[in-house]
Amino acid sequence: MARNGLCGAILAAGHGTITPGKSKLLEPLNNGCTIIEAIVHLLDQRIDISRLAVVINHVYGDSLQGIIDKSFPSVTYAHQPERRGTADAARLSVEALRQEYPSEQFNTILILYGDMPLWRPESLALLIDGHRRHGATISMFSINISNLNGGETASKFGRILRDAKGQIIGVKEPQQMTPEDVQLWSRCRRTNPSAWVLDINWLMQNVIFLEPHDKKDGFPSEIWLPDLVKIAVSKNRYIWELELADPREALGVNTEYDLLIAQALFQKMHCQR
Image (tube, rainbow, N blue to C red; front, side, top):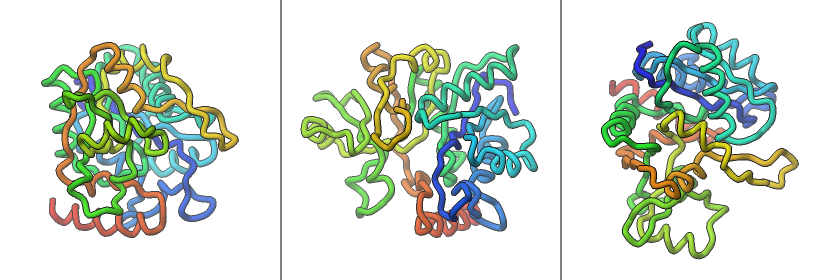
């Protein structure tokens, strides 16, 4: 791994399953390679990062760590004891890296979700490079769903809201949208797949200002990464957006059907490289 101030985090503390009793991240993609192994390999071997943290939970953490450690012994683990959301998981990943490598300076963090194994390294490299060139606080992909035929995972992602000048002013989950939000979103129908590059010090300074979301599911309230966009806008920080050329890269694996698609796409993408 390079020593360039860029670290990575994989948020793998979700409780989703496809096969009962087994984390969906342990489902196979190709030739025995699991979802979690594919994304760890991507960040550990294909992206120029200095250190990598994987956030795990107490239910599936041991099984995930057992698989990862066989091929990637240098990974750092952060434990999320409760379902506190993606922003909390990101905070824990930074704290774990800083604790394990106190003498290293981390300036920027690339954050990916553990159930999205199809990212191309070239796409992530473009996002990272653009973040640096533009001096952004937050950088993110966008997908123009007006160009899609419907039914794709991309239509389920957070909606990117813009002002009258076309500037990003926030990202909201579909279930959060008010009629006013829908009008703002209709100006440019783009969604935000869950991949982020952030200024790491700014992230840690501002995660405390996030308002918790009560999902009314019996679990603790959560803080979410997309809400950082609104905070960045309020503080006049620059947000850089890169349209994702191939929306298939942002497929999230949540169902058996998603898994079948991911397996086929993973095989196809690797054959093309």
